[in-house]
Length: 518
Ligand code: NAD
Image 1 (cartoon, protein in one colour):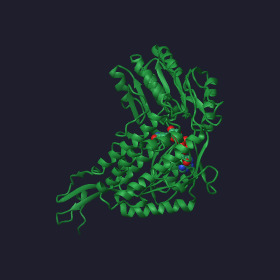
Image 2 (cartoon, helix red, strand yellow):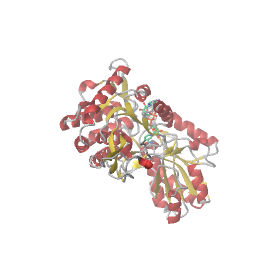
Image 3 (spheres, protein in one colour):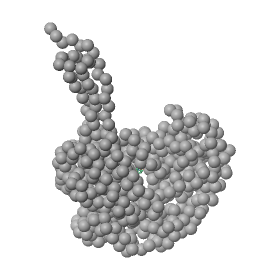
Image 4 (tube, helix red, strand yellow):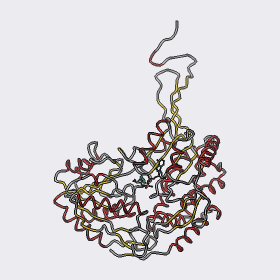
C-alpha cells in the first residue's frame, strides 16, 4: 500500500469555514475552537484529528422549543397539498446541486470520506429529493369493494406529525435527506439531532433547507436542528409530541431508543448495525468478485453500515480468491481523503481505532491468520488521526468476534463445502442488513434469494453488500432494527392511514349482516 500525505488542520479549518459560509450558515453560528459558549460542542476532523469549530449544543429548553416550533409548523404544513409540499423539496434539490462541492467538502472534512464517496453521498441527497418530488403526487391509498350495497370504502394517507431524526456520523448528509425529503412531502415536520461528530455538515444542510423553505413559501419551522450528543437524542426520544423517531446508528443506541419510544406508544424506524456477508460459490467470476469485495470491505475505511465484514467462500476457490484480495489490498492508497488517488481515508476517532485493535487481537487469539493489512499508518505525522490498512483475516470458525460489528475495515474469511452450510453460517449472526452471493449458477443465486436463503433486508447477486440506490427500501432485520427508509413504499411509515367507509344508500346497513332492530 502507498501512503498519501496529509493537509494541515489550519487548511481543513479554512476549507470547512468557507464551505459553511457558501451554504449560507451565518458566521456567528460557529466559533473558533475553544472560544464557543459554555457547553459548546467542538467539531473535529478525523483527517488530522484537529479541532475545526465550536458549535452551540442544545439544552433541554432548546430541544423543547424546537419540538414545539416543529409541532406548530406541522399544523400548517399538513394542510398544504402534497404536490405543493413537493415544491419545497424540489427547491432543496436545486440548492443541493448548486452546493454539491461545499457539502462534499464538509463530508470529507468531518467524516473523512474520500472525494468520490463524499460527492456520491451528496448525489444520493439529490436523488432522494427527486424521488420525493415525484412521490408528492403518488401518496396513493386503495379503494376496496364494500360488502354493503350503496357503500364505498377507501383508505386515505394523512401526515403523521413531527419526526425526530437521529443520525450517525458515517452518512452525515444522505440519511438526513432520505428521511427529511420523504417526511416533508408526507406533510410531516422534522427535528434533527445529527451525530455529535458531524455538526458542521448538519448546519450546512439546515441552512440550505431554510433557504429552500423561504424561497418556496413553506413555514420556517418545518425543520429544526438540535446539536448535541446521545443525551439530546434521549430527550427527543422521550418527547411526547414526536410522533415518529427515525434513528440510525449502533444496535446499542437502538436497544435504548426502541423500548423508550414504544413505552409511550410512539412509532420508530430503527436503522442499526450490520454484519454483512458475501457467499462466494465455486462458479463465481473471481475477478469481478474480488473487485466488488475490495470496494465493499475497504471502501469508506470499513465504516458503512453495509460494509462487507464476512466472506464465506467455497473451499475450492478460497486460496485463489484470497490471493487476489491480498494483492489488491496491498495496492490500496491510504491517507488524505481529499487527494484524488486515495481510496482509504481515516477511521473516525481513537475509540474506533481501539476497537479495531481489540478485534484483530481477539481474532488472532481465536486462531485467525491475518493475510493482509491491519497496521496503523501515518501515526508519526498525525498522532491524533487513525489511518489503518484494511485487514483480511482467515478464520477457522465464526467465533464471537466475527459475529459482532466492528466499525473498521476488517474482513473475516470463512470457508464452506455445501451451499446450505454457507447459508446457515451467513444467517448465524444477530444482525440482518445486507448480503450478497457471487455465482454464475442461477439455481445458487435463486436459493440465496429465496425464503430460506439470506435473512437480510438487502440480498444481492454479483454485486457487493454496500452502495445501495435510493429507489429501493433500505434497512434490515433482527438487530438491524427492522426499519425501512428511502425508496419503494418506505414513505408509509411517515404517514398515518385512515380507513373510510361512506354510506350513500340512505339506509343503515351493518356489516356481517348484523341486525340491531327491535
Ligand atoms: P451511534 O449509535 O454511536 O450514534 C448514532 C446517533 O445516535 C448519534 O446521533 C448519537 O448521538 C445518538 N445516540 C447515541 N445514544 C443514544 C441514545 N441512547 N438515545 C438517543 N440517541 C442516541 O452510531 P455511530 O457511531 O454514529 O454510527 C455507526 C453505527 O451506525 C454503526 O453501527 C452502523 O452500522 C450504524 N449505521 C446504520 C445504518 C443503517 O441504515 N442501518 C446507517 C448508518 C450507520
